[in-house]
Image (cartoon, rainbow, N blue to C red; front, side):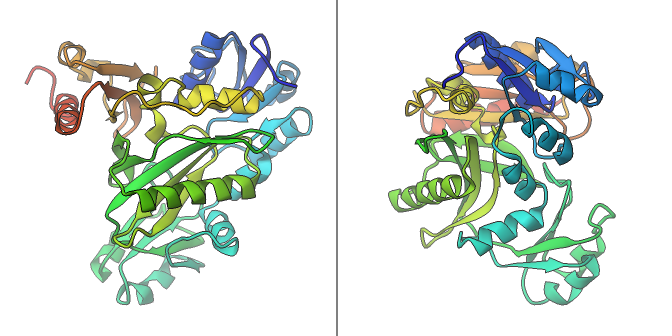
Length: 370
């Protein structure tokens, strides 16, 4: 039975994705409760009610269903919630995603295309591999936004590995891709699937810097990307969103880098450039409401605001940009490379869009007043 507006939705985790999801929930007339230790965090600022994890059973009593906005949460807490109310996507999916090793093993064991990889007991085992092929070394747990990730092309690069790469790690062949893309799909309980167009992602030191939608890829690669996304969504039994980051190779081959069972940074452009945002689509999927095929109104870009607080942003210039939509996350402390917000750029075409993205980057990453 569908859950219509007025129902109570729980959000596990209180970061910016939770914030944007809750703003969409409130727009649509749903009640939103957050479970997070930071009772003044980005999601808590806009929620109807915030619960500390110590009060998880009060959170459960206050919700009809729950979803999570981030994979790095306490899976035991999520499982205790799932024992009482539905959690979408399931904690089985969450368990696969909490380790890069378990994620890569799942993909490989189930026949999905991934780069060649090695599971290593510790970083000392990297040394013999470095002279054979360029590598990307990744921490098994806790790594995101470039944390716990190292590109190794020589023994000198090995010397620069820090302590955040400790314990079991995964090493992958460094792929000579022509583009990095992401595909977002929504899937409901009946197995209905709808897609957003592939978007092109440009990263800087492992963190997403900006996105362009739609990605400029040929129909062969696009079709394969959709096929892989649907196959993985069905294999996992996703109810909610699935986002896959992929490498596109010269041969039209597509390889999976990683996936996320939740809204994704590369999908923020949908908030202003599509008729249904990724956040509304998640709500529709978990509440068992119709999933229309989303429409992209125009070419769009998204630029991340990294490590810049409100005193570091030239608002006059940003607000003077045609088609620029500013989204801030309500974070009080602007740490280096921390995601503080983003700018969506809409209504531009071809070279105009790239020029607008370059202008936004220039405005964000030069001192205010210069």
